[in-house]
Length: 336
Image (cartoon, rainbow, N blue to C red):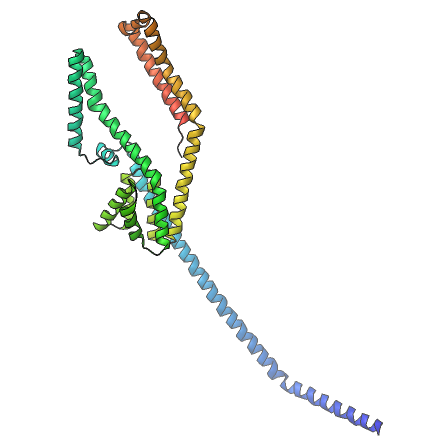
């Protein structure tokens, strides 16, 4: 019985295996066709996905190229404007008066200069009675001193602007990060900032009210404050307006750059102070020696002022001293 059951089970197993083999042989073509069809569908889907990815990448590349070209065009335009402004190495007197923060017109300035020169010339004529001396005093106090005062006030105002400008940029960065638009951030500086930054930002707001855009109004800032820092600010605003981007990050980077420039200037001034002191001593030494010789032996040095040959010697010495002072000045002054 046991042997018979084993034979029967073997026959049943062989029959089942044969039936499975026959079924697989019959269904193999259909299974293989479905597998190939599924493979083709997957390849088509992958190709469509790759095509969409390639299209998106191409669109992103085109957008980046357009943005780069826009930034380059903006920089080129701003560079041309900066070159035009830099050609005017010596600004007009009217612009210098405005940059000094004075509300004087040219006529008022000329009248005040003439009045100052005439007063001191009259006092000099009363004191010495010499026409050459009077004429020299008139030129100095009527033409030289007022312009020197304008230059001094202008430089002092520029230094005050540089000291306060990074703080104003930090306030603008915090305002923009909190959700305020650029116009409101500028108005905040114009109302709550420190002088002279507040006055200049008020002029930006007034320019906007007259119809100018924000980049154009900020570009005018460089005309009133001819400093590289003001030009950097105008460039950042112009690029952001044309190409977009994170304005708060750009202004924050600008503020950090301005502070680093200030630190670098301080380090350079500290390192070059010894050279500046040496140049000042060397430049003043001939005058000090001449004054001491005049106090001890006036007859020995007076001949330089009374004899024609002495006049030639003094003229040649003045020219030579001027050349030496200019050379030393260029050696100890550094542009950052």
